[in-house]
Image (cartoon, rainbow over all chains, first blue to last red; front, side, top):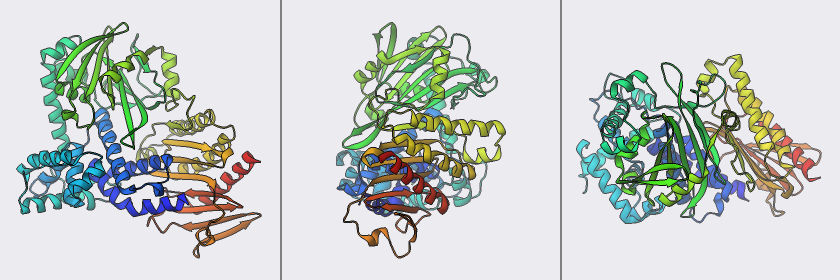
Length: 146
Length: 438
């Protein structure tokens, strides 16, 4: 019963995937990324057949987001409008947005989704050592604005 | 390095601004102006990106290595300003497209199991003259059991023009070498993975002089050096007509002999633009897009019965999209009606619709097919079951047509199709199915 199973999997993880994609590519592209990943994954196999659909889809969102970022760099650099610089968080938001996409993914999953480094490693398809490296690099970059 | 607790808190609040205070679909401009604070003439991260890129460009510009390897001096800043070449590229097309200079070397890449994702023109903003072309090829592949995309960017442009991503990558190169590929002398820039964080390979970016005054650049994301160099055997110089045909058929698989999925990508104008500035010519262009899209699907190498489904469904989906002022930008069809399974997906921007048809097990629970809140219409042997999808908590609508052991399901995704349209789609799909399998 793939179709309903897929719908359940999608419904269960949609919001989390959208948040993740938003953190990686911004809100205007997030839904595109999630839709693309879900459709592509479903073409390969039913989501309900996956052993760990959440990790699978999170990895897919990261991969697709990297493609979106590449395309954005190739086509047109992302335009961000920052408002009142006196607002405290602007600098941090800017700094987070300018992190490399993998570092941003690690930061998001660690500090927002509160995943452990081993869970992040599974979600990103990399080793825990690499996760720690990304977090270290990101913290080093962000420390100046925090 | 650890963060202090107050720093962690600040970081979490900032992440919260990014992911929760912005409605999906809202742009960053709106995010920062309406959700965080009022818009003032403050700093713009976009400008920071551009400033960063500009620094890289300046550094690269005056790098002797680059001057040597890129076949001649780059334009000076004043020359660049004068030429006013936009890094952004625009969808390539024949209607209203920029004129190519005489002898422009159009290049394509022959690559099995690859589709053309995007064809672009690069034009001088002031004069509108064509200064370059760019093709993005995509290969679906697997990396660690996860579907992943390889993206190969092939660009031809006037020598020395800025090309942001290339200039940036060249600035990160840890070494270069010159290799001979056929009659082309190719400079290979080795970009360490540490610089690009792709995770598994060192990127090799290729550059060569294609003809006097024109350079070519190949950025094979997802491939290592040796695989990248193998691509060179697929680089082909094509004439204007062949190039025009590629543009017309953009998205058609380069090698469709084994393809079961046909994906057509037509670059539509953004929704808002299309609504606001829809002219008769644009309407015709849209119609042409739909036509080419379905023609591509119909001309695929799939089972002969499969196109019937697409042919039956296409116009209806197009009508519905057009009625909403949307532009269909992609569609894919896979599966095989003759084996009673398959799917089709249509997308435009963030909206998509997915159709699937398959054998349904005899053991199906009737409660699943006929939930209490469903609307059921009996049409001969066919029951049309329509209901809102409660799982997704969105406007998703599902519909199933049950006929013996066959189920057809339509999921409107986040596309706001009317309920009647969804019902019609399922009926047409079912009719096409019956016709194909009778």
